Length: 159
Picture (cartoon, rainbow, N blue to C red):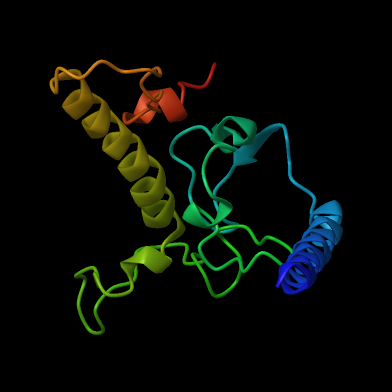
C-alpha cells in the first residue's frame, strides 16, 4: 500500500515538474514591456488631446487577459489597435444614418480604451468606497485608483 502511494506521488511530481518546465520555457520567450508605453491615435485619426503615457508596469498585479482579452498566453501579445480588434478610426454608424452603432462601437479604438481604462478605474474606486464604509479592519492598503478624468491621462500640451 505504501509503495502505491510512493508511485502516485512520483507520477504527480513528474507531471508538476514537466508542466512547470513547459510554462517557464514559454515565459522565457515572452517579452513584457516594463516601461511607460505611449498610447497614440491610429493612423488617420484626428488627435484632439495629448497622447497617453501608460505606466504598463504598475498594472502587473492584474491578469494580462484583463486588457489583452484575445491573448491565449502562448502567442505574441497584440496591441488593442491590431487589425480586426479595436482598429476603427471613427465610431461605426448604423448603415444609412448618422447614429452610432452600439453593437460594433467597441471596434472604435477610443471607445475600447476609454471603456477599459476608465471603467476599471471606476470599479476600483467603487470597491474602495464600499470597503471604507464597511467598517471592516483591513490588513492591506486599498488599491490605488487610476485617473477617470480627461486631463489626468491627456495632460495639456505645452504650446
